[in-house]
Image (tube, rainbow, N blue to C red):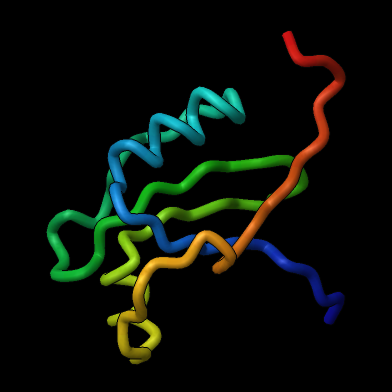
Length: 88
């Protein structure tokens, strides 16, 4: 089996604000917040190129799902960069 990364799940503090930021910043469409029928299941998924996806979860829900105790927020928790052709 050829290994590859297919999903980047990110924990965010405010799901709606983060959805808007990623939608406006990446210019990708999303069906919006899904999984609302499940406790701790709300998620936003963005399709990127080559089958790659970014998923946004509220930090508390991602901690719950991974069975790790929710930690205080930190600006150095994670960083993602992407290249663009211009700033316009």
